[in-house]
Image (tube, rainbow, N blue to C red):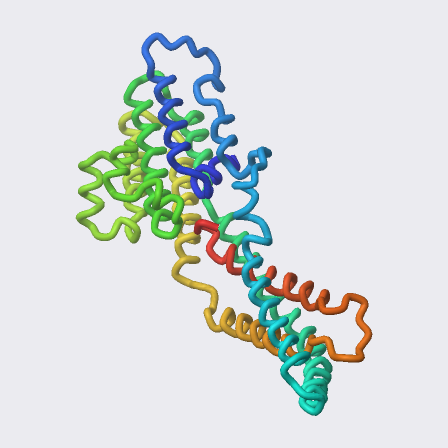
Length: 335
């Protein structure tokens, strides 16, 4: 099932995925097709070749996810500022001024050490909360596999009417899924940029789409197709498409709606912005003062002269943490 998440929320080109999907449909619907097994009717290899799970590594795919791409420019600018201050200290100040600057460096270095420990705790707790929220949103996503499995177990597929009922139930569920997540998922928004794209993908008929649009914003009333599916299940006993156990389908649809509601709630109840501002302010202030507190003074022995190795390591650790939190703050974005 990971392939479904890659297809729905992946970063790679949606055009390739749509083309693969169309190719699969053409194979299935082509007259006189001699395809005689499940995987020939829709092999998953094409999806995984364009998904994040693929083991094929190229520079163009590695670079956007690398640490250098995320904090390389910031580290370069930071080191430029460090060496500018160091050059001014070495060449532009006289001996008296250098002595005063040295005292300032010693003072900052002494007092920044305990601040660094507190900052590590503050940033670590912030990243932990962001990661927990990100993972909870992922786990809240409803899997669409359960409904097809239940319809295969409960629906009598011997009649054309029963087949249409099963397809409609699953189509309504996926329509609600897309309407709910399209508002918060950038990748899904690119795949279905307009309401007409829903009809083009045969997720909704023009009549169904006009009914939903008449009720308001599609992203706010995404639950309407699920209510239609509930009504269809209620009528299934009279139509003899589902002879019994309609409550099982109703429970599955209710669970599907509840999980979508939970994902939608995360978009309304956001992580407190003040916490992010406090953490960002603390990190930037700490490393701003470290530009002075980590300066190498004259007559001070250094294993690596003219290169602040430990300052660079701390910068990578702290800003790497901060970048992780910003990258996964929205699990449905482009990151």
